[in-house]
Image 1: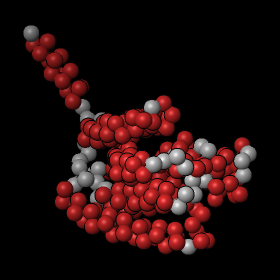
Image 2 (image 1 turned 135 degrees about the vertical axis):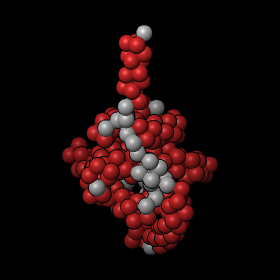
Image 3 (image 1 turned 90 degrees about the vertical axis):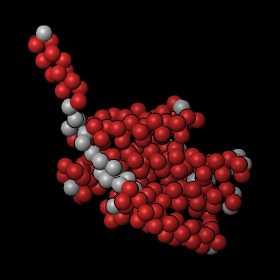
Length: 247
């Protein structure tokens, strides 16, 4: 009886053992490796649902590894500060996009073949649901929340920024396929050849990786995930609006 009880207690201890940081990072990357083609190739119409499920799963992994809401950038004590940062950043992006849309020299940058068949309702759905939940929630929780929080606890902010940003750039390989053809402003630069398409993907990965560094710094300075969330949403959502209105 005593051996059985000991074995049961040992089994419970094994089940409740917290994940190591390396394990948690590895599982997070594995989950994202599956989520990426699900969102971009296999089931893009379920992107919002995928984002919610994956975000919840990754937060659970962070907590299982001993992380906290503060590690995720979601400490209630810092949310108001993060929201203030977000409001300012959204205003700045909105003003910048408005100026760029009015200037003939930059107006063409908003042209995108993917907006051609969209209705006003479809654009509103993207701006109010798809972008904030399907894109921003998932990517910010994954890269500036869980990955950043896990690595920062173990190696500090510099390593956290590097790991998060590199993986954020790689995350955008699939969404960037066909980018040169979809964006007329990029076609003269990259052309329509296979080599040009590869160059466009590499450029997109480098650009989004650099954007990831900025998002990580916003998260670090504000101590809160809403700051990069606000900027991320504004860049994507206002891009949809401008592209739709100027098509």
